[in-house]
Length: 182
Image (cartoon, rainbow, N blue to C red; front, side, top):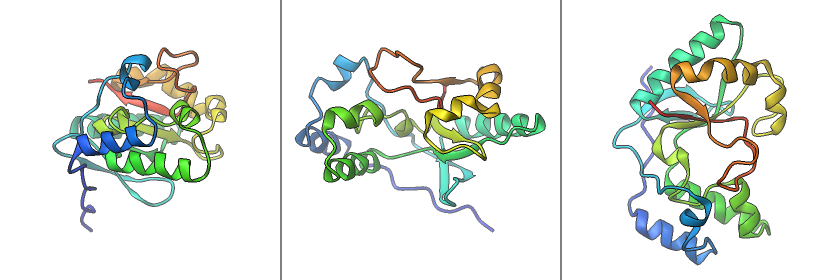
């Protein structure tokens, strides 16, 4: 069986960011939230399927580190599952649009979802993680053996928790979101 084809990257990042601003993302969003603009990688490596059976991708070095980390956790009887990895700017824009369509205000959205152009997922170096028995993308993940394992071991694989409690970016605490820095 061959790996699935990688997802499309954003054809026009500037247009995507302009559309996000039309939807209410402040022009100075990056500056006020102390966030850097994030580009998409030139290549992606398949890392397996997420909890919903969808193929997931990371930048090649991050993918190799993730696979080593996931194997090490399994060796310690901890199962790390993928919720989400690479997301294009266009995909991120779709998240914002869907939340606005459901009646959420842009301020609420930007506390829990990065604006297009600022998501670490665009880099192909971040992923959201869960483990069996815990709801995905919920704070309860911090009470799991998987989270404890990550806090003790993830830095060995150059993964770090991006949004701890009280982070300078004004993004809600996300114990499931880990970024590769190697």
